[in-house]
Length: 92
Image (tube, rainbow, N blue to C red; front, side, top):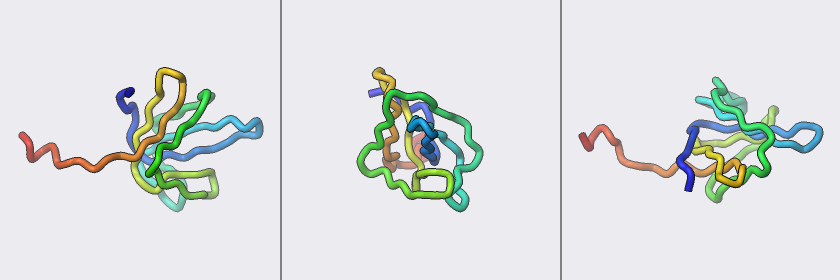
């Protein structure tokens, strides 16, 4: 599996031709993703993995939680639920 490239809230928008754009930002305010720092346009496919909670907003569908976003070898943009992990600071 590919290493996740981005972590944050995502918004999925669709243009008139049906092409999906995935934008990743640092937060979510009133259904709008804030501080977008990554954008995936023209992907062959967007795969939303099980466990990812999406809601409809005024700008498109957005994640309710922080997720991981990565592009697989087949040009598929994957959106995966971020698994909880322990506090890494405590392991030093």
